[in-house]
Every structure is written in structure tokens, then in C-alpha cells.
Image (cartoon, rainbow, N blue to C red; front, side, top):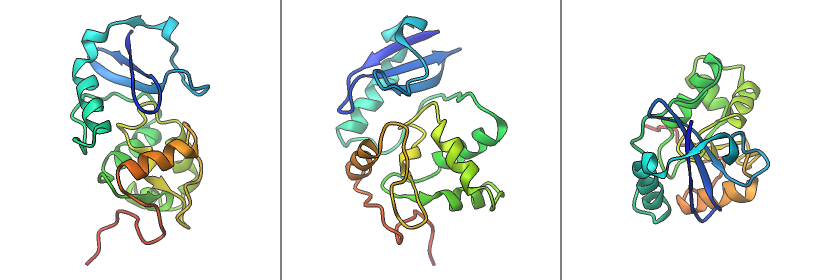
Length: 167
């Protein structure tokens, strides 16, 4: 399983792929990093496109990613993650809204649990999901990182900014 470490403002990121698709993106030295460097063969060349896109994102030049993703999880988790992928850059939404979008309106807590298991954080922008009252709630990389990412995207979390369409 190829992997690569990529420097970022958040610390080194560990990217993991399988079959040409990105399967994991973690803060490399974070305790919640599922994949470890010693489990994967370093292949920085295989991640040149991901590296470039992440550099552009952190430089404020990119608002979306164009990478082949293959997050590993249950069918419910994958539904949540693909709904999270649809949250526009600079916007936030709530766990309850994601539950409604996947036609499971009473599953906000399960959405939160699935969001917490997102294996491709940042690219699947789980940091854009906030609590119903506008609070940052939990985040696998820490709420300080979540706040940093939201500031980076200029999306101040508030109860009135849920990335929902109006009109």
C-alpha cells in the first residue's frame, strides 16, 4: 500500500492509496492516525497530483479537489462521506442536515459517528459539519484544527451559516 508524507500547516500529512485511489489522509503524528508509516511503502511519486492540490488548497488557490477517492467504510458511512463531499468550500452544514440529505432524518448522531471515522479528512471536508447550535463540536484532528480550517476557508461557523440553499 503506497503512502507519502506531505508537509502542511497542520503538520505532516500521511496519504495512503490502494489501486490508484486515495484511501486515507491523516495528520501523520496524530494519535488518531489509523495508518502508520511503517505499514506502508513510501511512494511520493504516486501522490504528486494530491501533493500539488493540497499545496494549492493551503495556499488559498484551490477550493475543491479532483482526486480519485475510495474511502473504506460501511454503506452508511460512505453515504455520509459522499454527502459531506457536496458541502461547498467556505460553507458549513449540520449533522442533522446531512442526515436529511441522505434520507435518514433521525440519524444525526450516527452521521456524527460516521463523520468521525472519515478516513480522508480535509478532502472529504468533515470539518465543515458543525453542531445544530453552530458549535464546532468534535473533530478527529481537534477542534483547534477544525477552527483553523474553517477560518482558512473563511467560513465562520454560526447557526445561520449551514451551507443550505435559500430562496
